[in-house]
Every structure is written in structure tokens, then in C-alpha cells.
Figure 1 (cartoon, rainbow, N blue to C red):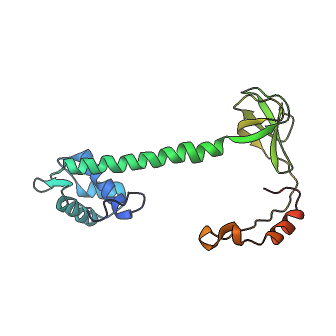
Figure 2 (cartoon, helix red, strand yellow; figure 1 turned 30 degrees about the vertical axis):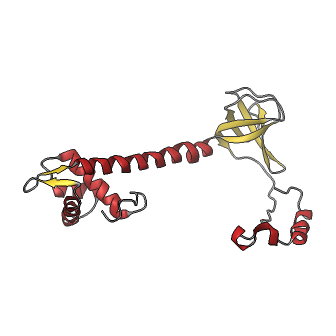
Length: 198
């Protein structure tokens, strides 16, 4: 297929091909185009057009009216697309959602893994203290000594904090000269007006 290299997450056409090919594989050899259409939310005519395309490209073999079989090439394409989807799901589950589930705080006291901690915000940093005396609590996922970082999860409540202001300085892209063309006097003046610079 012309856009085989475009994964099912980047091409609606390939996403639909993928769903139809899975539908054929589930039902083969007796395939109802209407059932597949109902399952994936397209018309039976669209399924028919896609199946014709899959046959033309060697991913499906037609054995008469309503009888189709996924070829080795079709199975290989399904496997490659499934691997791509699995990699993306692993990234979302582990790297994105996993990062949301566990935050880093500075331990104000010694903390044991599994202990309930009170969360506070001080000078722009999240702090955790052993015990559940505050308006926001969490559970430590690591051991920590005072003044070291600790992982926390299972948040409850709202962290009390004082509103402040943030100034963001956008540096030119490296193609446009990067930090070498930034105005150091302006950056120094902006930094002087702030207690915390990151």
C-alpha cells in the first residue's frame, strides 16, 4: 500500500485498514462486511472498498462471495502495526501516566516507604512531612532522610500555597543563533526581580 510506512496512529486510512483486517481475521473465512462496518462505525460500502484495496495489495485473499482470508503479508502488517501500537501504549502507560502518578517532593523529616505524608509548597518546591496533619496528603513510595527527595503518590486534598508570578524568557532557536544572540543584560535584569531562577 502506498502509505504502509505511516502507522495506524498517524493515518486514519491505515487505522481503518487495521480495524477491517482485524475484523476479517476474527471472522474468516465467512466475513460479513455489515458486521465489520457496525463494529468500527463505517458503512458497509466503505468496508467493501477497503477490502478491495486489501485484496489488491495482497493482504487479503478472496475465495468467493463473502469469503475472505488474511494472507501472510496481511498478518505481517497486522503484527508490525500492533507492535507500534504496543510501543506507544507502553510509552503512555509507563512514561506519561506513570510520571503523573508519582511526584518528587523534598522530605522535611525522615520518611519510610508506605508512610502517609503531609504535602506543602515552600519556595516553589513540593515538601513532604511524615504524618497526615495537613490539607493535602500522599503516600511515600520511597524511603527518604530529611532534606532528600522522596517519591509520593495517591494524592488527597489540595496543597496550600501562595500565588506568585512566573517570568518565562524564550531564547532564540539554535538555528537563529540560540543563547549566543540572547540579550544577557535583559535576562540579568529579569532574574534580579525574582527570588528563584531556574
